[in-house]
Length: 172
Image (tube, rainbow, N blue to C red):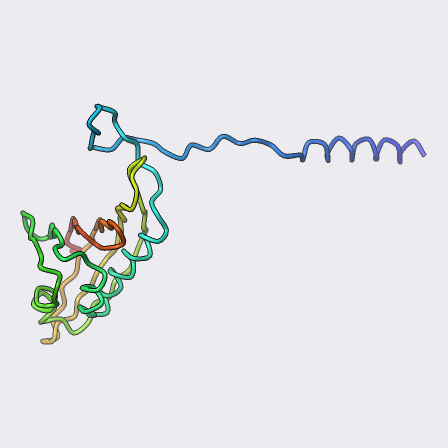
């Protein structure tokens, strides 16, 4: 009988420790390079799942050589910072001409994504920057291949891709 009472008391103590507990989770951090008009430094937060989906659909459209889908997901002008060269290109994204020119020698693209992170600026609305770390092997129509390690940031604003910034490192 005494064992039953001690077991009951012990069980009650364990269950009382399993109640609701408040856990403080940090949901922002670091700082953003842009400062608002008041001089307050903004923090980074996790970005929108919807914008993440748009960026990944754009990324997949390039992989699948679907230039029309890329145009559908883009603003009229996309700022492109290519990983292989310096500078910024203003791409007319109202048609497929630029993308088709870039991909004109491609037979296929094989990409392996390492990680994807959607970030936004604290207090911003409808703007997410999706960072994608991946390797890429392009097979050209002549049978040759080219490859690289990439980090790409796809900027999505108001549900359209507006900027692509790439950093590239050769695989060999």
